[in-house]
Amino acid sequence: MRPPYAQRLVRLRALLRANGLDSCLTLHRPNILYLCGFSGSSGALLVEPRGARLFTDSRYTLQAADEVHNATVGIVQGPLLAAVGERLKRVGAPTVGYEASRLTVQQLQQVRRAAGHRVHWQPDRNPVEALRAVKDGGEIALMKRAASLGSRVFEQVLPLIKPGIREFELAAEIEYRMRLLGAIGPAFETIVAFGERSALPHARPTGRRLRKNELVVLDLGAILSHYCCDLTRTVYLGRAPARIRGWYQAVLEAQAAARLVLRAGVTAGQVDEAARSALRDHRLSPSGGKGLDKFFTHSTGHGLGLEVHEDPRLAAGQKQELQAGNVVTLEPGVYVPGVGGIRIEDDAVVTPGEAQILTTAQRGFLEL
Image (cartoon, rainbow, N blue to C red; front, side, top):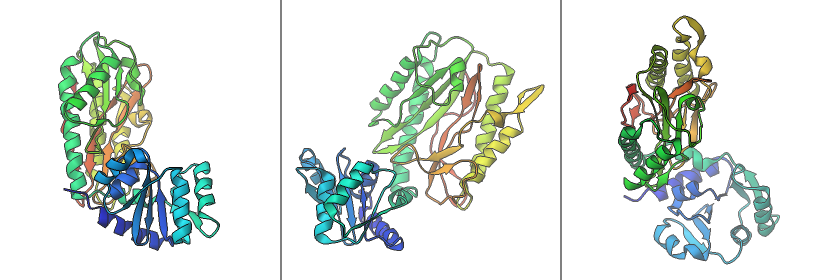
């Protein structure tokens, strides 16, 4: 089924009018894909009061003809933004919104020069990304498939976690198996970290070899039909000490606490606090020490969709109210320098009631 591009443009125009804008310009590829279906690497989409126009170059003539819906395609010989500006100068558009976080100063100057002094440029608050944050049923179905693919990849690589394998070898196997299962590719650089390196939340795979009695963190994301999944699991090669099993149980409880709170109407900060509160109740060692919340060094989660990081952000102090249709990660972790880290991450759909978990990989502590 084709995504509802026409309805998305109608909703976007309503947001533009509410913000006093006549038109808006986006160069961000996921936003262009969301609004008209074009997936090429060179494009500028101008959404006007009664239409939309995609500007691209001749490399994408056939692709644009095949992919673009509800927008007129303009094949440009020179700079795209100069063509956008000339269009605005010709048809007239008193106030145009642009993505301040996406356009460079040079790009803005270029389109301004071409449009002339009668066009007023207004930095907007990313209205397209506000729309993208709430997924429809078709998007959620695609994300469920992506999450299932990522979960299958995790299960497939478990037998490869043996002494001697190198981090980058396991990362390569993960990304290879994503492709075999139909993924466009990884949503981000796969994280594989062994032993004490698992205490690095964004560790990049190295040539370090796995040894017996070490933690293994695998963080993987696949893109399927343009939508991302994001999954993290932590396993132990050997028989884990009691404190490691205790930390894992604490992180599992933190994720469960966040999942229990996650629903439409609560704030993003409340979900984050639920996870931190659960970790606060656990100590670094059975004999005491700091609460494990002191070793949780990032936010509890983030939005997910056409990009691996979208709105909303589940972080301390965030006042944004969650809406039904938001898809977010739940990924509390504990990172102890010199020892290792534990993270458990799943993808969840926000609903008016209990959150729907999309990822299906086993969540219990695995000792291999």
